Length: 273
Ligand SMILES: Nc1ncnc2c1ncn2[C@@H]1O[C@H](COP(=O)(O)OP(=O)(O)O)[C@@H](O)[C@H]1O
Ligand SMILES: [Mg+2]
Image 1 (tube, helix red, strand yellow):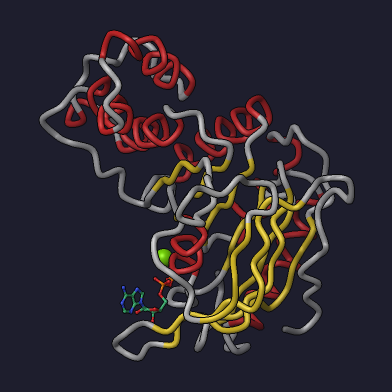
Image 2 (cartoon, protein in one colour; image 1 turned 180 degrees about the vertical axis):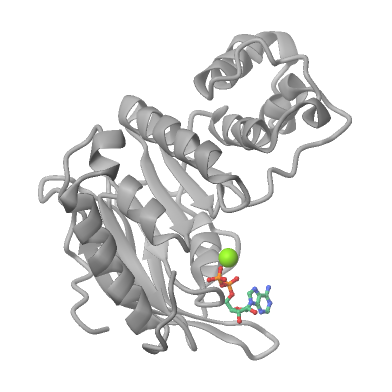
């Protein structure tokens, strides 16, 4: 836990949205995936979870989404109202690494799916679906099928599907890891624009130092065996961020600091992230 202040937030005025206290996770097979996780996510921040493969990033994201229970510790949503069963009413969109689209269905049908599962009729929500599709830059592609789209466009559809219910919090698990670098940079820029425009809080899992520094207001660096928090890095650079930021001395310095922290997390074996 060297140097981690779980209550340090990006903006001292921003209220705590998610409070993770002493969270541990053991899977039934015996894997000790997480231990002693303390982290407070501030409303409106862009927080990345950065760490080597297997350090429990996906596990932590799933616990935050309520897809599974921690073995110890608590995850509170201090500002959420709680339903009759004592569960917080979170407004969450989840984006996975694989776009996992239905290949036989159009872009429109894929994005409509979460609303359809809620029982919403197509005509009633058509404008909302179109709005989500336009929001990710795919206006005009509603009738296209996944096979007709590039990898980057398929990921855009997946993001549209996550945001069609207009969530307040977006949880993203290495969403751009499989994309080529130029596509990834474009999606990074579009994601930042959406985040700024819609007042989201984003939790973004990545193993890329460069991506985490470019996007984040804070980076939580994690280590493995069992997964733990090592360091919280505040990227104190203004938004909007753009190409000049990517080329700046400040960006480079943050990449250097973050890279060193990640190397520490990997046991100082000289791994190049
Ligand atoms: N459903 C599961 N059942 C058992 N073990 C799991 C499960 N999911 C993940 N693990 C194990 O927990 C550890 C953390 O995994 P994961 O959260 O996927 O890490 P990351 O996303 O950082 O790569 C790994 O050792 C992994 O094998
Ligand atoms: Mg993972």
